[in-house]
Length: 323
Image (cartoon, rainbow, N blue to C red; front, side, top):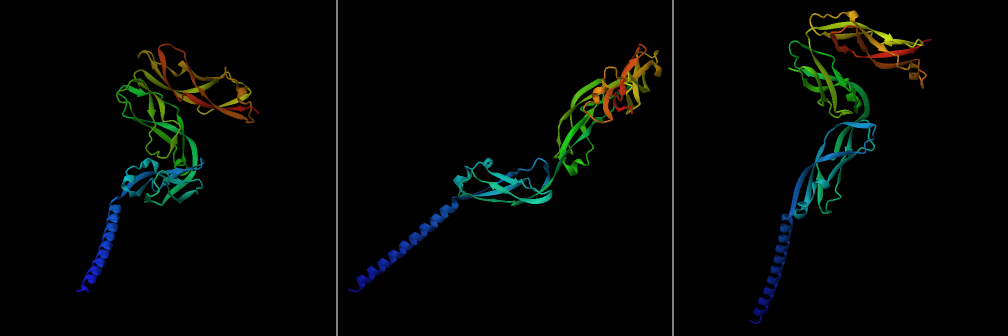
């Protein structure tokens, strides 16, 4: 009997220790569980910023313009994160011409330190080319036709050229740009409007003008006559020779009624140099010639008729010094 009591005490003390150990283990497991349930994960798709590319170069192709980032951490921290503070950056300060891989860097300065960041694309392929500029013609894109009894006069585009800038490989194949569609159905008289340049097919190309001014004469074709007229030079400076890019032009003349019929000798087409100082054009240059654009004037010799259109109305003249 004397031995029984100490044995019971011993067993109780051992069982108490086991119970304490079990409680500690349960507490640890509970803490791990609670901690894990407080951890969350969220994903964002953010644009890639390409920086520090030298002005003389341009990127023509990239394999990825967005990356997906995964943030892992405490849920209460994750819900307060502003995605605008996270930047994906590809530094192109030391690029190589051609297609090469460049590392993606995530700017996470605004994130808490205990937020884990992973992202889908560690590298991005970027094609870098030389950047060039060139001047190209603007072409008008007319749709439909004018009404019966009418015709188109001399169409003008202002400016008629634009400067385009972009990758050398793309600009090499571009000789002109065009306007968006312009409908002339049922139009009469003189159409003047600002028209955007068609940007389709010009991705990655920069233009120095987004739109042009077009002047489209829609002329009644009744009593309309077309002539091919030779251009004369008036008031020449005899120290120089004059070479015209076009020696003849098309002149459209409309008479007031069917009884009046104009003839080729009823008008003159000319460029007048009386108020142009040719000597000043050669100042500051050692060239033997200069090229300038001049407007063609028309002088009618009869009444009852009017000039509708001159094509072309501007002529390039090469002025050369006499040897």
